[in-house]
Image 1 (tube, rainbow, N blue to C red):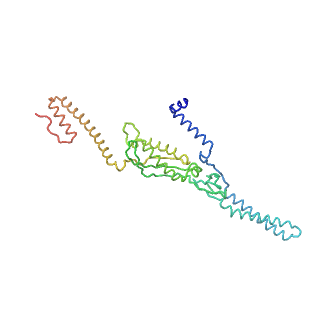
Image 2: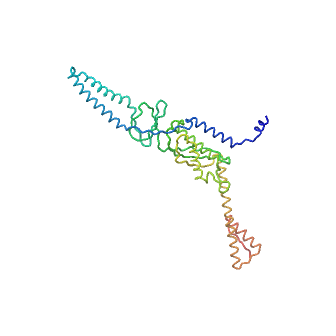
Image 3: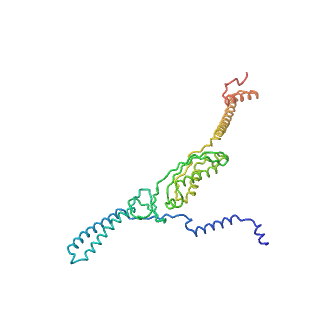
Length: 332
């Protein structure tokens, strides 16, 4: 009982729990190879024209032998009756050619450039044909054509709450292609819909991770850190679609803007910040210009009292900063 209480009161070691969980998961995967996903198997089939040459050769030889042995059997039927057996064999060869052409015609297939054909035979994966051209093989198998060309997904503008909770709208473009045909066909249902869904999930994850504008100088933001954002978006998307055999060639955020409900307010905020920065620059420039002017007057022998200096600085600052007309600065 005392040992049981000590175990219940002892603190949990999360690292040990995670390690045990990962080890248990790995044991399950090793015990069930199907969990690891399908593996692409490349097959190479016979060229179609070679099969046609063989069929035509057999048909021609069988036809010639049939005519020859038929004539000989008719002429020498009493003397050589076994010639009718050769006639039957020749006819069997001709019949075999017709059967191959009629029943095995489904085995002929044309594979275009940047295209693959996945073969299945009664639910069993036979392999993938990636060679281009005219081939013959597996006449009773089910074929699935998969395009290996690069595809482009232009995502719709998605509304996401950025790190600080402000709604922003993000647009995304993803360039992808099929790398593993077995995973694309057997491990996911509709790889086109799969890449679209995972692209939206990835951009939502990235959008919630960073602020729209940097609050701390040097901070990565959605507006300022485009290269970092695009790189992380691609890595996140590659991790998500790895199970489907899809290769991500490029992923970029194309549009970034505030949500419509706060766009006007945020634009006013940006305009106010810009106005403050501009005013600050104007005031600093005006103060430097006024002090330089005052020093220049004094270097030329002009004498100012404290009151005159105050009036000089005030009037000149007003003139520069507020664009007012120049008034009389110094009294007589």
